[in-house]
Structure formats: structure tokens, C-alpha cells
Length: 609
Image: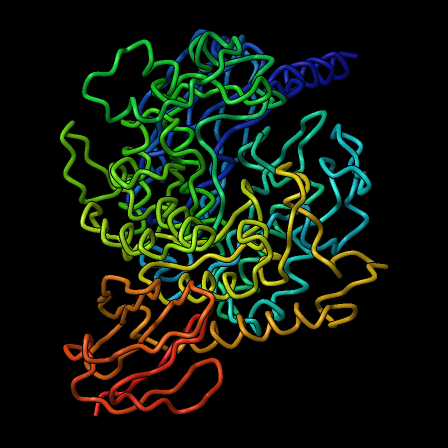
């Protein structure tokens, strides 16, 4: 009997020590040894966790500081990973009222040479993909029992079922076209009741949306893409989260969300950031205001949230082997935080690349954010590159207004930028009219736009479907982001097989692919000097040149052929006699004049003699 009582007592003690788990999550969920910054802050979420006593029994990690916050269901732990630490599993112990809860925290090995990974650059051509609308590789994941919105392909603003597997299945198609990197729209969980397909309302910063796939599938997409010479670029958002984010029902602190977690819309007046005469009222409503009620604006001045977001970016780079980040809504976040964020990422990965979205047609506003820019307000930045909205707008205006001087004039404004060669140049994206719509379905103007983006300085980006002459009859984003033909079983048109394509689409695919394939082998386009001449008679001529090659580009936006006198260009062409037309392959003699066809681009490849 005494033995039975003793056994029951031991069982009772054991049950007390290992009571039902109270810890819901630890983020980041794991980390790596050998990182440049060996300090990590863990966010621990669990009912009443702040009254526990955490310890780490390991010589690989030291627990430096324990932070309590307003909410007793959170703890923030500052840890340092030893420089000598080896990959393995660490036990984190949480003791409360005599009970002990043990959580395993894994330390992983980094990929070889991870720190020195090469980011996307002017050597690359970027393909922007809206995941939900590109291809449905796995119909079984279209819906998920724990997530609100279900697939409804008949609704233009609904989920259509595109996923990570759909992209992976068609990487060879993208490679054959000539693309060398893919900017994939946000893939993280968006558990919103409606309008969740676009991915810009994150509800879990460490989890891929199950309707797109799994974390492992995203990692495998990067591996497969890399094996084919294609880089993976992640679309990130730190300005806001989704109203369905798991922490919204139990915020870590009262200042986690701007304006006290009460919807207050941004004024969108981005000029106040640089305005020397701005009011603090206007500035606050720009930076702290929300986009919409379903996108709570994050307060990056909270040090715990700031650290959380910085670590999340580094975690995804290391975990998914990323080659770049496109940062959404860059000026809407706290600008000092954004500098800390960019500096932390670039310190860990010195050869990485990031491009920031500053949607403004004013080059002075865009220039403010890039590394190396000397600003009158003293702001400095670690952000390597920007998306070139001013040049895109000037190109559209030049084509539709038949006034190519606007493009020349904006290109001449490059003196404002610290490094315009690291700008992403583009024709359209997921938030604006399709380029073929912008130019009123004018094929000649469309080809001029493609030629310019692929030959000017910077990193070209093509939005999925632009190569197929996608159009939209309404500015509704759900229509702009239409399904890619052939991405769904039963599609009557299939671009991957060529079924149902029009002659115009086939011709444009051939033109774009030929030009991109040529560009991929041309260092003179990747790094060559840009020299341009003031347009005459609506013909804009510019050159890319290095020690061995010259590329001559002439854009004629008038409707008639133009006889171009070459004497103006002797400083570039003095030692050459001929060039090759990239589109037709014919040899063009460069003696006195050449003909530039009306409403067309002319691209000549010239070898120095």
C-alpha cells in the first residue's frame, strides 16, 4: 500500500512539472549559428507567461535579459548565440508556481557562403507574379478549413487558386522566355474574410498561406528556381498587418498599433516627409494613418515590434535563400525604423539587394530613400535601390502624348539619384492599368516601351501577362490581376502550350523573348555607360557603351519614318561602320544616315573596330 501511495505521489509531481502547455508560440521559431549579429530577441506568447521564470541550460546560448510588457501573455527574451555554437536543439525552460514547461529551440547550420549571397542586379530581368492568378498547381489546397475565404474563380476580387506549385511547374517557361529572377507577390498567411488573394494583409509573419502552399514548398521553389538560374525575390510588408492577424485579439502592448488600434486613415501626403515646413499633425497622419480598416498600421517606434520585423526579414532571407526583397509602401513606415531595418539586413548580407516602393512621379521624393543620397533634412539610408515610378510615368506620357522629350527630360534627372543604375524600371505592375491599356493598344508604342525598359540603365521588371498584351477595361485591381491563360485545367487558351494564342500575342512573345535573351548576354547593357542626345523630330537616341561594345537605341514616337543624320553621334560612332539590328538580324551601315521606322524602336548592336 505504501508503494502504491509513493507511486501516485510521483505521478502527481511529474504531472505538476509537466502540466498542459501554456506557450502558444515562440517567434522566430528557430535561428542559425554563425550569423554576423549573434543577438536575437524571442517573442514568447502564452497565457500568463510573464509571471514565469525562463532559463536556458546551454553553453551555446546565453539569456541576457527578460522583458515584460503591458500584456502578461507575452515575454521578450534577449539571447546571444555563442560564436562557437554548433547546430543542435536547445531547451528553453519556463517555471511558474512549481510547474515547468520545456520548449525546444533549434539552431541550424547556414548554407555555405550564405552571408555573401548575390542579390538581384542590373544583370537580371525580373518577372512580377501575382501568385493567386498565375497557375493552380495543386487544386487540393484551394480551400482550407481554418481560413475564412474560399476559392471563387467567377468573382474578379476573390481567390482563384493560384499557388506556389503553379509557379514551380512553369519555371522552365519563364527561363526560356529570358527571365532571371521572379518577384513573387506576398505569400504569407492572409486570413481575412474577403479580398485576401493579393497577400498584402499578413496574419502570420512566419507562415505561408496554406492556400498557396507550405513553408517547405516556398523554400523548394527557391531551390528549384536557383537551379535554373532564377533568383527569388520576396515581397514584404512592415507598414501594416491584416486585421485578422493572430495578435490583434491580444496585442502585446497598447502602442503596438498606431492611433491606439483605432482605424484612422492615412492622408497619403508623402511630400510631408521631406517638406521643411510641414506640420507635425500632417506628418503623423501620413505615417501613422492606416491604408484601410483591414490593414492596421504597425507602430515601428515600439522597440519590440521593430526588432520583431527586422528579425523576420533576416529569418526569411536565410530560411528561403532569398536573393532580394521588394519592400511595400516604404515611406508609410517610420523612416528611422526603415533605415534601421535596411541597415540590419545589409549588414548581415552585404551583397544583397532591396528595392523600395515609393509611388511618386517626383524624382526628388524617390531619391530621398536611397543609400548615398545627401538630404537637406540629414536623413541617411542603407536602402540600396528604388522602383522608378518617375521614369515609368514619363515613358507613358511620352508615348500617349507623342512627345518623347518627356522621357529624355526625366532620364536627365538622374543627377538627383545616388545610384540610378540600381533602380527597378518597369511598364506596369499589380496596382495600375496594364501597359497595353495605357498606350491604347498601340503595338508600336508597346514595343517602344519594352525596348526602353530592356535597354536603359537599371533592372527591368515585367508584370505577368504584359508579354501577352493583357488589357483591362476597368481600373479594378481584381481585373488587372486576371488569370494567366493555361494556369488552370480546362483553360481554352494555354500560353504554356501555345493553344489559342492570337498571332499578335505570338509575335509579341517572340519579340520580347528575343530581346531578353539577347540582353542576358550583354554586359554592355548590364553595366555600360548611358549617353543620350536631346530628341529631334520626336526621335530619342541613346547609347550604352563599354570598351568593346556599343548599343544604339533610337525610339521614334512619330507615325512616319525618320532619316537620322549620324553626324550628331560621332563622339560615340567615330570608329565604327556598321551595326546589327537586334530584331531583324540585318546589317545596318553607319555612314551618313539611317532610317528609323515610324512608331517603332530600333536597337543596333555595334562592335568597336
